[in-house]
Image 1 (cartoon, protein in one colour):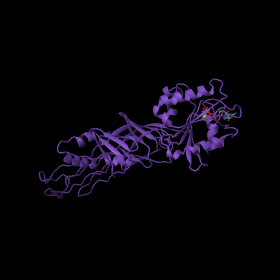
Image 2 (tube, rainbow, N blue to C red; image 1 turned 180 degrees about the horizontal axis):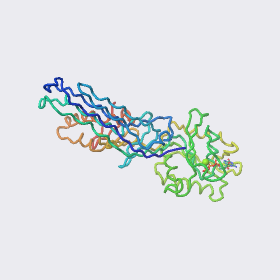
Image 3 (cartoon, protein in one colour; image 1 turned 60 degrees about the vertical axis):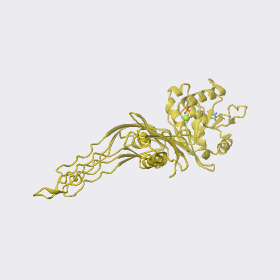
Image 4 (cartoon, rainbow, N blue to C red; image 1 turned 45 degrees about the horizontal axis):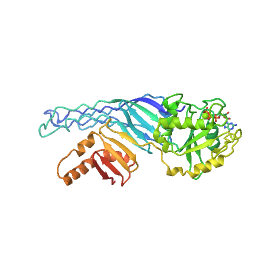
Length: 399
Ligand SMILES: Nc1nc2c(ncn2[C@@H]2O[C@H](COP(=O)(O)OP(=O)(O)OP(=O)(O)O)[C@@H](O)[C@H]2O)c(=O)[nH]1
Ligand SMILES: [Mg+2]
């Protein structure tokens, strides 16, 4: 079963408690109570070999372990292991406030919940003010969070068409996919992935369920089909000249309408217009004519795909990370590969300074470098030489 959306409840682990003990038991001096162990965090990590959430479908609750309590006499509590949830590339993560992150890079890691800090024991609470504390901290309590993971497949090419146009027949002919085909509409109800292997590079292609009028507003499988286009680089509109309800031009119109009303940015993607079922009707213009069933014209289609140099193309999606759900409070957005904007409370704190220009600049650089922002930018794949906009300041990123 293909699972491309899942709701989960996450719990971080509580921190263990610190202890109260003393070197000298009789006089209760020289505190040596150790600290509790930190609770486990919940971390998500992308794995390029996953293509949906079926590996976690059977669980709706994930709990990280609690940290151990400290014992007496310098024996700290055990730190709990973090709980790592693996996710496919192309996962968007939502919490109750909205989008948290879009994970597009390999081995990208993100901590969704920090484990509770272990409480300090009386040894670590010693201070000049209180050299012999008779107190210890409890560990931080576990935190609960409801999240939704939603996948938009990462593919090179997506095949779109009305029901029955022959999309699954085509993917079966040009890849290793064993998609189901049949003469009734809506045979395909979830995407089929395949790899085209006989070009210079391997390309991932996906066959989607048939699109119908109103898909972009949610009719039929509507948006759950269209969302997979956000991470693809090329569209194939597979047209069916034997369709008695809509002629080829009407099919093109319908597909364009639904795709572009769903997401305007998809206009940037190259589209191959392919008329299928040429064994029945050949379409007489510059369209690519194929018969997926009889394997006619397939080489011409593959040549057209080769000419697109897909490796040089981009999808229209962008990485996204909203970190105010955790320790930090900033939002990073990239509007192009070399222009990134960071906004939010942390940024305001970093840049809210007055003084001479050079002092302000130095202090901002220092604060920026010591904030969580550079690490997150690195995670999102920012390149040296890119422009970073921090509030009203812009500067060039150097690793
Ligand atoms: N004559 C002819 N029939 C074809 C051709 N390609 C597909 N078909 C037939 O068209 C019907 C639908 O094919 P599918 O590949 O299941 O179509 P689909 O677009 O995946 O359909 P949905 O998944 O329902 O949207 C089947 O009966 C196929 O055998 C073709 O090139 N020529
Ligand atoms: Mg199909």
